[in-house]
Every structure is written in C-alpha cells, then in structure tokens.
Length: 402
Image (cartoon, rainbow, N blue to C red; front, top):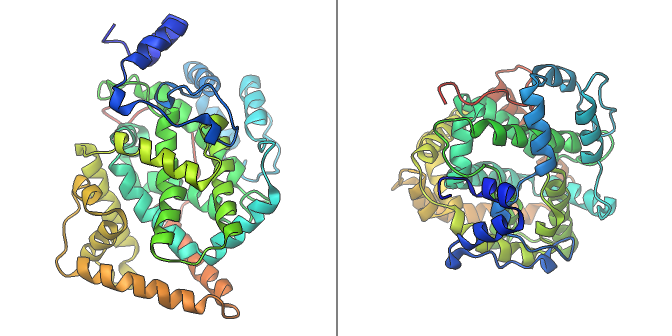
C-alpha cells in the first residue's frame, strides 16, 4: 500500500481510501483552511493535495492514448480570441469539454474586470517584475513545480517554456484580458489542457516517482506566487492602491483560477482569506532541489540576456531576484550573493517606487508607463521566441530522456 500513490488509493478505495490517504498527512501540515473563506462560500473541505482535475485528466489521457493530440494542436493553433468559435474537426468529447471550460463563472463581474485592466495599466511595472522575476524565482523553490517543469517537455527548452508562460501572464494583464477580443479565456483553457496532459505523461517518467503532479494545491501554490505575492510586495513598497483596485486585481485572478480548473471552494474570496491560505500552503510546499537550482540559473541567465541592451548584468539580476524573494528562497535557488549590488538594490528600489508614484497622478503618465511596459513585454517575447510565432500547445511526451 505504501508504494501506491495517494491518488491511486483514493480511486481504488473510495471513501475508505480517502480517509486513509488523509490520515497519512502529517498533523503539523493538516489542511485547515475553511471553504467558507472561498468564492463559493462552502465546500467539502477536502485537502487539495489529493484533489486534481478529474474531467480534464480523463479526457487528456484518452486523447493521448488515441494519438489525437498532434491534430488537436494543429486545429487549436489559430484559436486565439475569447469570442472565437472552436475550430471544426475537434474530437466531440474535447469540444464538449472546451465549450463548458471556456464559460466565465456566474460570479464574474465585468465591472471589476475592467477596473483590474486599468490597474494593470497603471501598475504594470510592479506586476511584471513581481509576476515575472519574483514568481519565477518562487516557482523554482517549489519542489513539485520545479520537478514537474524540469522533467516535462518544457524543461528541455526553457526559452520556449518561459515564452509560453509569458504569453499566459501577459494575457491576464492585458487591457482586453476578458473582453471578447482578448485572449485570456483561450490561454487559460489551453493551459488547463496542458496541465492534464502533463499529469498523465509525468507518471510514465522514471524520474518522477511521486504522487500525480499539479494537484489543486500545486495550482493554488503557483497562484499565490503571482497575485498574492505581487499584492504583498506592492503594499510593502507602499504603492498607493485604492480599495476598488485591490478588489478588482484579486477578482481577475479569481476568474483566472476558475478557468484554470481550480475549484471554487479553494479560490479565496478576499485578500485576508488569500493571505491565510498562502501562509498555510506555501511553507509546506517550498524548499531546495537540484532541478530548481538548475532552472533558476537558466532563468536568470535568460533575464540577463534579455536586458543586455540595457547593460544589465547577471550580478544585477541576481541582486534583483534576491531582493524580491528574500534570502531563504534565494539560497534555496542557489542565487549568488552580490556584495555590491545587493545593498544597492535594497536602498535604491524603494526610492524609485516613491519617485514613480509621485509622477503617476500627472496627465499622460499612466498611458506612457503602459506604452513602455508593453514595449518591454513585446521585446521579452520576441527575444524568447527568436521572432517565431509561439503558442501554448499540448505536449505528447516528457523531456527527452525522461
């Protein structure tokens, strides 16, 4: 029994299996976050470590076994807009699933989504820094995530992997994210399909050997390295944020979580609930791995290359990453300490924030800042893709040799 994954226990043992799997969890790490704090306001309260995405998982396992994925990827290549009909020729079971998966939840608030878009416009420089560099460094210090990335197909070509992650991140932060002409619904649904495929494929890798990857908790952990982390950093930097903006920024990520396949009973309803959930699950999911250290080195090397026209060196990138995530995470990631740049970044960044915030209320400053941020995003994507069109695709294999 000990050699079986916990999920196999759940499947084979029904309710008794579920009780047994939950009993194996350490009391010190028991799931205590209440679903009353969720967007649903209620739920079973099951530990999200042993909950996955059952409908998507069964579907993608079937599509992979049927050899249907290459044709699916071809058909979905030009499916890019939220309001665009699904292409003809998709397998019927996939089409039915995607039609349901692309629907916004009943609780989605278009007004809040529009406020969030304007907030992203005004605060893009902070959000891109926190979600890109900060979120990337946190991700490599999450063993489950680092190993899943490393041994899946994307781990063999990190420029392509980061480009596709950036496509998703930029879609969430776009001004038209959830408008009909936006792309966020598309990128969320495609990412949900990718996650299900990776769950199926990684279990076949001799290097994996653990529980089924990308559980509901794994997705929540990643979610907290993005909006929760970014909001905490902006408050730490004393960036002025109105209550309506704060609520709207949370809302766009709540909708995104739902479309990624996270159950509503796990999606925090408020920032207080989000912070409480983050404080419970991040500590039990973070630590050092060899794969994480290797991925961190690749990511920081890419960052230094991306910004080379600005004469930004690797030591500065190291210092910026350490400043964002703190010493413990930076040490787990194997990021070198920089005796010159570390204290300089700590001293200079808060001053830069104060200077920038003094300018934001002036006419045209938010628009100008958005233009600059958008130019940086386009440059990063161009660099990562080498100018080639890149889109999120469902994998059919793990990393070569894995």
